[in-house]
Amino acid sequence: MPSTNIQQVKEYLNQLRTKVWFRVITISLLSFALSYSFLYQLISSPIFALQNGNDYEMSDFYNQVANNRPIRSLNKDIVIVGIDNCSRLDIANLVDIINFTQPAAIGLDVFFTYTSDVDSTLIATFNNTSNLVLAYDAYQETNTIFASSLPNVHWGSINLIAKQALGTIRQFRPQFNDSLYAFSAILAQLKDSTAFAQLLQRNNTLETICYPSIEFEQINGIDILNGNINLFELEEILHNKVVLLGDTHNPFDQHETPINHNTPGIIINAHILSTILDHSYIESTPIYVNWSIAIIISLILSFSIVKFQQSNVLKSYTTFAIRIFQLVIIILFLYIGCYIFAQHHYYCNFAPSLTMIALGVLAVAVEPVVYLILRYIIKAFIILYFYSKKLVASIKKK
Image (cartoon, rainbow, N blue to C red; front, top):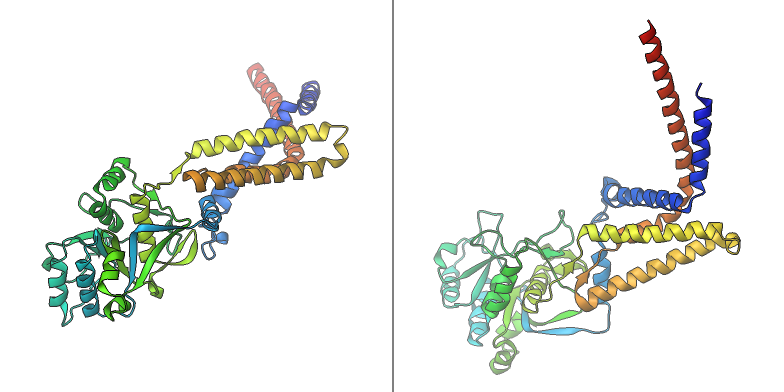
């Protein structure tokens, strides 16, 4: 029995456990393993898949904080016209009236999937509106039924991007294929070709939508049709603007966004258009940077925990001191993340860092158990090694 070797290993492990660097690395590795399992395994399991329970990102928190600021900004380039309860003839008349005010572009978020008696009026109005963009579904073969009769109309994909069905709309796709661009991208092209060119130059498959603290002027289409807004006033409001026509209260066109649980599709497209025209793109730190920051913070926290435990002055208050230290770091990270996002449109995903900080204490509690398991594993390997060596030697003698 290799008792001498096992004893030497035990003594070496006991010495290791007194080393600060060994405990710091062990606690940090445990924090990393626990955090990675939580963020990428546990939270994506069906247990958390309740009402978008597993579709929450750090950026959603940043958006909510930024959107709750008292500072609001009215977009001066975009006007939304609600067409709830408007008939096809009403829509044709609205487009005709709005076109008279010489807007930069008109976007109509409506699908005409069946024929009607007024289609000829719609077709004539649409063909006479050179800056009109109609909605197109990139994933459906059947779109507007009289599309072939509209050679002068622009088309843009109205499809919204989410990670799962009924998920949160955080991003948009600028281009779906060589000839089909996003609805808001085509509107941006008509309003500002330079902004559209810059969007394409970015060459990103997906872009993050800038939501917080932005408002849009909204007009009821019925008020325009009834003459409640005179033509001169309407021209002052709509001239050289991008006018978006769509339902604002349709329950079948309400979507989850980082700032609202029920956002109309036309409002989301207004935010996409605003992101393009204002160049307010959200940049993000790469995943490896997020985890690198998390590991560095975990090493610092682990070192602090070990030092707290070894301190004669703080020994009685170790748990309290660790909790305060954790709380301060978490608040600091949340503040920095929100500030950078709101002021500079930069998304630093501190979720790995915050998770590793939060689970750091759990890692400290688990560390002695891991140490014991490690001792038993090494002991078993040593025994197995010597017995296998002894067995080989006995076989050779035979």
